[in-house]
Amino acid sequence: MYKFYFVAGSQDLYGDECLDKVKKHAQEMVETLNSSSLLPYKLEWKPTLLTKEGIYKFFDEANSDEECMGTILWMHTFSPAKNWISGLKIARKPIMHLHTQFNEALPFSTIDMDFMNENQSAHGDREFGHIMTRMGIPREVVVGYWRHKDVTDQIASWMHSAIGIVESNNIRVMRIADNMRSVAVTEGDKVEAEIKFGWQVDAYPVNEAVDYIKSVKQADVDALMDEYYQKYGLILDGRDEGEFRKHVEVQAGIELGLEKMLVEKGYNAIVTHFGDLGGMKQLPGLAIQRLMEKGYGFGAEGDWKTAAMVRLMKVMAEGKNTGFFEDYTYNLVPGKEAVLESHMLEVCPSCSDGKVFIRVNPLSMGDREDPARLVFTSKEGKGIATSLIDLGTRFRLIVSEVESIKCPEKMPNLPVASSYWRPEPDLLTGAKAWILAGGAHHTAFSYDITSKQMQTWADAMGIEMVRIGKDTTIDGLKDRLRWNEAYYEHR
Ligand code: MN
Figure (cartoon, protein in one colour):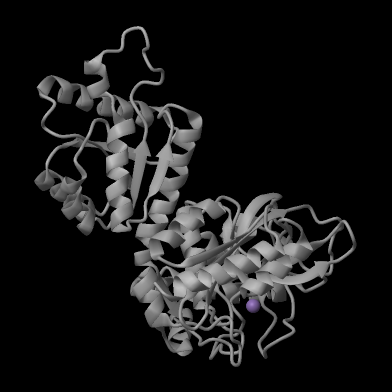
């Protein structure tokens, strides 16, 4: 279970009485926040840090505690920052510097020097911030009274980013196909991705996956088919029911086979490619959609970067409301501009707005039998679409703030799941900015993650992030790209 360390910094000059209050205040903050259910994960109070040795040990413990996803640090009094250097040098878990104080109001009528010395984070937190800036340590600084909702909201939001930062190191992508021939944007430097993000990206022969699929027992397929038929509606499109079922059974076998392979080999993301299916009877459609819903990352046409991003964002979003999309086609009617998002098959049901149906349709590409897929339309609401690109010398993350809206009309002839969204600040500016930044057609999308949270992750990884939002102008974006080039190319 994920947790976060909460610790106050001080020093031993203040005497036991003062340090006892520091301890009590920190404990009360932890207890109050933990019982408030304002935070998605628990805080663990740690004894007040006073010395260089104690501070070093604290970070050493956080590093080796697998459940610890980050540390929240607060200088209740004054903690000389040279004492923090050796500890901060080994700190590997994400850091939040919470700049708060125990009391909300300044007690004008009673304040004396004892109170001043005991409640001086305005003083101590500046000393602490200075050393982290001098050491170039990426961290989140949250400022405000700890009981205020905007402060607890910021802590909660950061917790999801922190989990992404730590869990990024555990992302393992199984490639059962190479990138699609001649396509540029899905390519990338896998060694650099492992150095920067911790992602392990490995290839397996597609027919090793086929062997797993072939070894699936019919009884297991039957059981999964019962689940499908109970959970999803069927759109037969005039097909014979028995023949329809046979097509769906193929996907049930693929789901079970691929999942067994992923579990046995320890991967949490997968890529496929319609042009490299070996002995598979169908392109994995419904099977991949189900795996994504269970939390696996996915990228089509060998797109391992997007597969890893989908996994990353699912981990950050607790598995919910997050998946893989492709920018397909526009509505360019003035005032109604939007883009239809979909893929050949593989859209995650966690984005659906309600009932999900199974359909069987021919694919326009490839040479396999008609694959079964889940079809639905997506929820309305704000979200972000992300694209991680490799510029040859470095990675760039592009994040577009979008609003998923209701499709103005039904699309009865579209046999795939879809979403319909309007990028900020408007489709034409958003698309132009995306293209200038070099963003791909594949995206990892989430309703629950914000561009701020992705920025925290990108900062921790030491890569550039380009945000396209309400305030984006093309001139401003072009300048940003130029400045970023100067900064990130010469680090
Ligand atoms: Mn594609």
